[in-house]
Length: 200
Image (cartoon, one colour):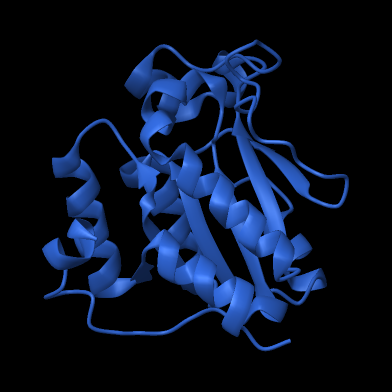
């Protein structure tokens, strides 16, 4: 994958998640972001299928604001236009079909940990390794990855299953994450491992 070549000077640590201690975080795969999601959707769906096969946990985050004046904070100041909770764009991409055992987590900040019970849920489910995919690479995905790292999770960030508004920002995030926070992988390698090689 080209992204791994582009960040090879920083992506010097190698590891794979333990499926029985792993959770996939599919970040903000919502209709609001369908244009950004389109190039990575097949890879995200492949990761979901692989994690189901490996019996890893799966969490879908959903960003939305009920009252931006109260729950918007600096996001409202910075962007102005925020995703309205309960609106059509707030819904998950139609190709995602969460099962009843998979968690849908609503959030109002970049990181999926802020103001949610994600950390408690992961600890209760004995999750130690987090696999991150979704959008946007340099905002919610990166912030969640950094937040997970400082909470002592091992973070696996999927280069070709995350996306943002342009390649420059995407690659910059991958370099920063590889340098200090995450193992950077590609979809094909990770799916193959989860389906065929992971410890049962």
